[in-house]
Length: 270
Image (tube, rainbow, N blue to C red; front, side, top):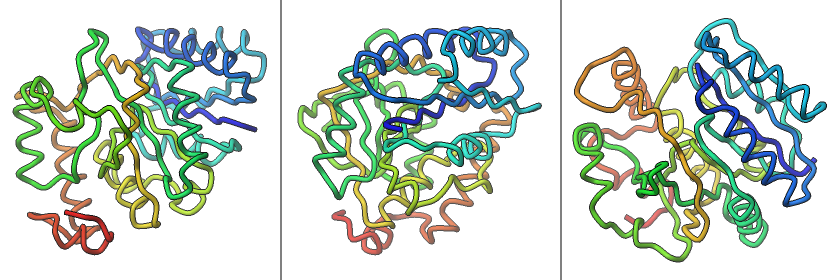
């Protein structure tokens, strides 16, 4: 098996058909042997009917794992990661749309760079605007800034938004990850003590701890039609879940305010 794709879905009727259509088209263009897992977290909006229809059309290429309720982002994805057999593991959100150049570009980069455990593309919104999908590991102050000023941060030019060549990054949001199988085998599954977020930061930290780098490849891009559940001023259960996960992350990896000690442990430049 060449590529295993893991997609997480929750009330995704608006997006899931386009996600699967763009993905399967890209996989077929690349002439790769593939399997797709969609893990659904108890959708009630028609997502299951769409999945049932597409599952029949793909004739064994798509496996739907249907959970009875919302189990968060870690337990759910792990159900598919445990079954994935591919040389590459593509983790994708249900509102992210793949294309063949990105699929091929990320897998080729992994092939050509043995020390790279995860490759990620440039990510844009549906409008084409740059999305801040990669960042430094979060501190409390950094998270506060991102929570309040993310839109302004994305509108300002940065080293990443202007990048034209691959660059190593601390972490990438899990809207689109390409992993080597050996990375998954060495790092393991997602930490199920985190319900919703920042499971992506934790996993990327563990990729670095395992001796790999994470590389942003700006020459290829995907659209992420983001559902920003934890953005904005209105407090919801997602904000509190995110905050709980953030404190757990910092306790687990033994850092709170600054990154210098963490970077030193990881052997990273500050």
